[in-house]
Amino acid sequence: MQTTRRLAVLTVLAAVLIAAGALFLIAPVWQPQRPAAAYVPAAVHTAEPEAPTLIDINTATAEELTALPGLGPRKAAALVAYREAHGPFATLADAAAVKGISLRMTESWAGLAAANH
Image (tube, rainbow, N blue to C red; front, side, top):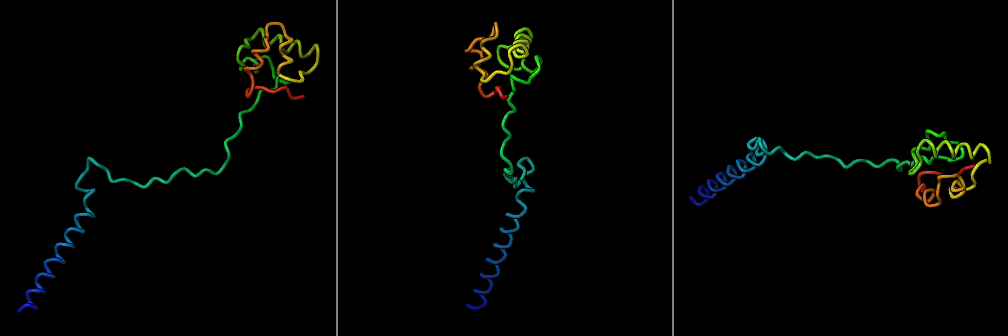
């Protein structure tokens, strides 16, 4: 008699566990306002970020030079004219010799421009 009762209890317990498992599996279907969390893999980092392209004040056109802080079309044209008359600049600071361009302005070009020759 106890064996039959034990078997009945185990059967009911197994049925409850199966039902609970089924509810766990279909729970996302029950809650349509809450979508199931999807696995989104992290972005794969394969390459180093590119360094910004520096503007070479010895080869850039007047139009390209206007991308630098403080250089409008007139000052950029003056820089190109000075470069053509006196040769390439050795450093960014040398561009301060151009009328209208200050040493402070050339310092603001750090990381944006270079004087390659």
